[in-house]
Image (cartoon, rainbow, N blue to C red; front, side, top):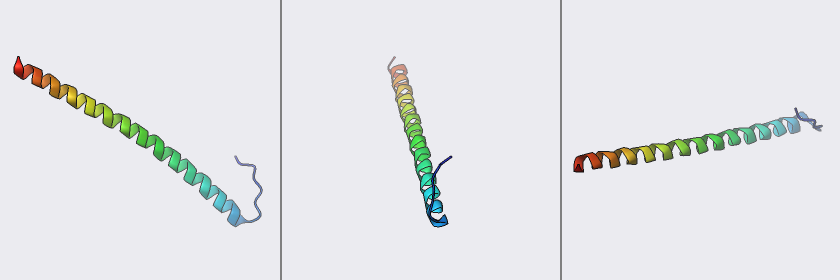
Length: 59
């Protein structure tokens, strides 16, 4: 996976912890974008439903 040479096991552990943190932050960012998209879709759908209900009441 990574072709790195470490002077100590502590450096190796630190390197892999940093890579894991980067990966988890990437996953978190991806999930936050998906949540924002779903939230926006819900808001649009709710406003459409509300608008359609208002039109039915006035007709």
